[in-house]
Length: 182
Image (cartoon, rainbow, N blue to C red; front, top):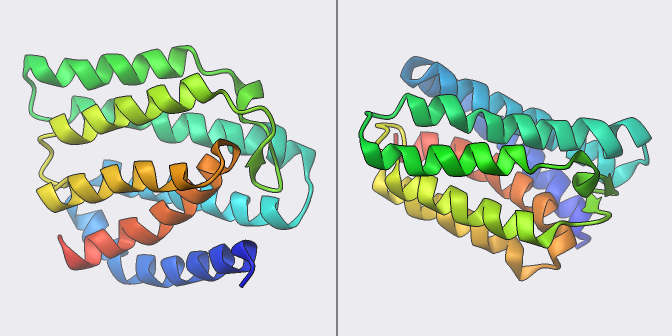
């Protein structure tokens, strides 16, 4: 089966799962609901991108959505129970946002045209720290390890396909997590 078709099917299944879990997310945490919505919006644009060429989507909208999805980790970090250790992932998130260059995240058919490997590996490290140090009631221990696996899974493919695989795995995993764990 073609990988594009597989991800389109996964996205449709994930929307169905989201419809079953949206009430739980809404009742539990509005910030996670907002993050989930942005993940699915990004997934919708990625589905479009892998099927059609559109300069606005490929060069601007998808890179901006990636930035916004990472930016939303700031209020999620701040909403954690505060202690000194929570500052480490927050500093990392702010740093990767600061060095973010939109040109490094332009895509063609969902594949990064000029991937910034340093930034991607730094992003993975920062998110691992964020997940491990999060004391949010919405990131259970099982979820933490699952989210870390979802950071590494796209590395099984070429680095220029990292965010293609990452977004569709998140679209599938997030509603499943809310249905099964929460």
